[in-house]
Image (cartoon, rainbow, N blue to C red; front, top):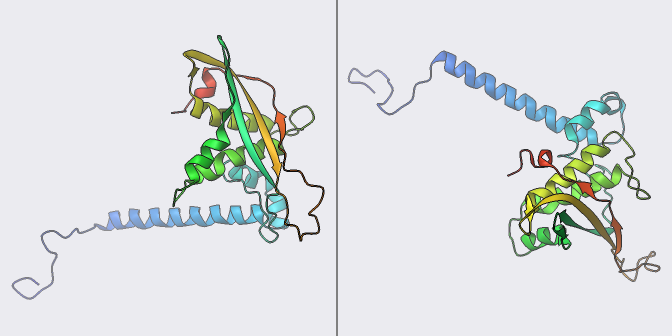
Length: 218
C-alpha cells in the first residue's frame, strides 16, 4: 500500500508490460502446441495401424527415426528375447586394434548408478536395432532407404567414444560385431527346451572413416 492507501508495486517487484505479456503468452502457446503435437506423433507411431497413421506415415517416420524409435507396441508389448552386445575395433596405418566392448561400457556405467543415463541405457542398443532392421543379415546389404542413415548413426556413436586416433595414429576404418545370446526361459515355460546360452556373433564389414564422420562430435 502507498501512503494514500492505494495499491502499488514494491521496489523489487517486476512489472511486465502488455507487449511482454503477449510475447510470453504466445511463446507458451507455441511450446504447448509443439509438445502436444510431438506426443501425438509418438502415440500414432506406436499405436495400431489406423487411417491417420497410414496417411501420414512418411511424416511420422521422419519425426521419430532414429532418435525416438521404439521397439515395443503400445497395446501389445513384445519383450526382448536376446541380449545383444555390440563391439567395435578400428584400423589405422599401424594395424588393427582390439575389439572394444561398447555395450560393456554402457553396462559398467549403469550398474550401481541409482539414476542411470538414458544414453547409456538405450542409445547404442537402439542404434543397433535400427541397423538390424534396415540391413540383411546374409550380406549386410541395405534393405531400404534408411540403411545409409543407420550405418552413419552407428558409426558416429562408436567414433565419438573411440576418438580420432588409436595408438597415436589416425583412425581410417571401423568394424562392428554383435553378439546375440538367447535369454533362456524358466524351466516351467513351454519353450524351455532347445535354447543355447552360447553367443552367436554377426560381424560387419569394414567401413571407411573420414573427417566428415567426426563432424559435430565432441
